[in-house]
Amino acid sequence: MKFKAVMMEHTEILRHIFSTANTSFIETIGAKATIIEVADKTTLLKEGQFVHAIPIVIEGLVRVYTQVEEKELLLYYIQPGEVCIMSFSAALKHHPSKIHAVTEGSGKLLMLPANLLNEWLKAFPEFSTLFFNQYNERYSALLETIQQLLFNKMDQRILEFLHKKMQLLQINPIPISHKQIARELGTAREVVSRILKKLEIEGKILQNNHTIKIL
Image 1: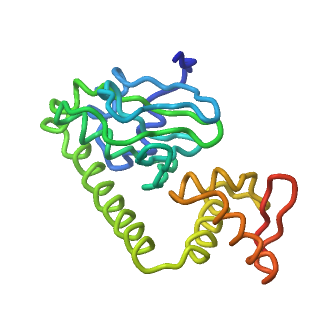
Image 2 (image 1 turned 90 degrees about the vertical axis):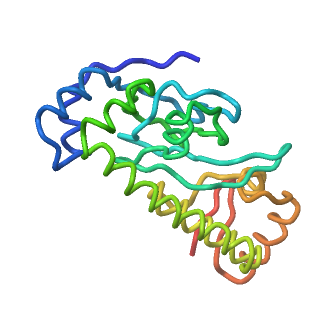
């Protein structure tokens, strides 16, 4: 896979992400980081691959999920200013990835070389603070996912999934297929189609031409 490198002022991006960082930190990280453009549905990482660079999202979204056979389970989305903490953990331990990461829409990423993580963590407290905060957020997101799986009915899960998509993409109607919803929620397309029809009858959504509008 080839990415298109983008010539941008790295320090401006880093100052925005690490707002309290000192100049030495910004200059050191900026000298090694790379900014890339990515297209929609670009696979950044697959399960079993070793991590060579850690992405921080500048623009767009990255969907992180786990997969068993053909079924997926959405773990979380990485939004602008956030980092893939599962990639960070795998890189730090030199372990293969346990997740898949794919872009949702086109975007821009700040790529940090994985071989420098240990050095930067020791040298810059600001760097460790970012990942510590991200760990907390991802832990909360995973707990929410587990709670939904255990306690929420599928119609409630689908409706909450659509609301989340609308908020992240900031569009309504949402361009999404029944198959995609089923894949991301780890269920059958027939189940999704039946529940979406029920939600439409209840006046909660409107379906039209591979889009779903939340009413």
